[in-house]
View 1 (cartoon, protein in one colour):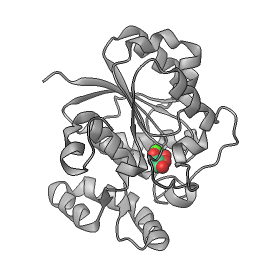
View 2: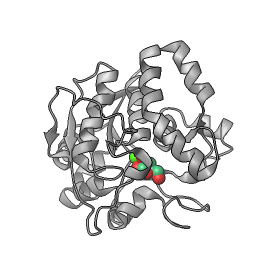
View 3: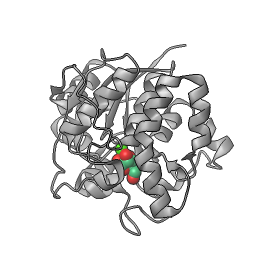
View 4: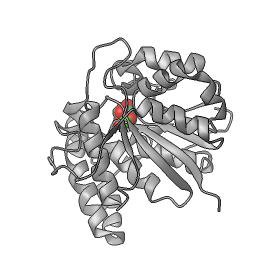
Length: 264
Ligand code: RIB
Ligand code: CA
């Protein structure tokens, strides 16, 4: 099976970290690199968390690039109340001994210019994507597919009645991408992602499959599950970002299990 080449732009973050685990372990994908933007945590911290997720998959060969560290216009507001001060559930892991690169926006542009079959899965604010578009819109004509976890279609937001965090952190970036990307935007919004809750039962099932991975997932989600219990009285946690990766891999899953229809 031909692997699909993908750049994951993200703001790790607990659910971003889970999404990275899913993408790296999916035989359908070739992850060319991770580009980091500020969102859940400042990009510097997000990059360290990305390395941790790659280390868990023994894939530190995949490059991690810091991109834009501030939204286009707004002040940065992070979500460390939800993801923990360290961005991964206050485990305060030791730094992974691997290189963090800079120039995430140029990595996106150069990769698109040099390949005709690369897709982007954006799991954070769209600042890097907007900046890359501003800098070299022509490069995006080579883009295969663009999936963005963000927004909320006809349901309430998670930052205000109408605002979802990724687009709320950098509304100017989101606006620019939605107005200028020369490709269809596959938006995986809260209307879809809130239908999927990672429960202790599922974590126990993962534990039976891979104890090391389950230990890491348990560690990074504990804080997030506590947050969901306090805020919403649910036992588990809504995991937004992995769903965007799952959609990219097999969207029939959405039509079969989530009641979504292709025309949505
Ligand atoms: O609103 C949910 C989104 O915001 C997720 O991508 C989460 O990681 C945060 O970035
Ligand atoms: Ca995210």
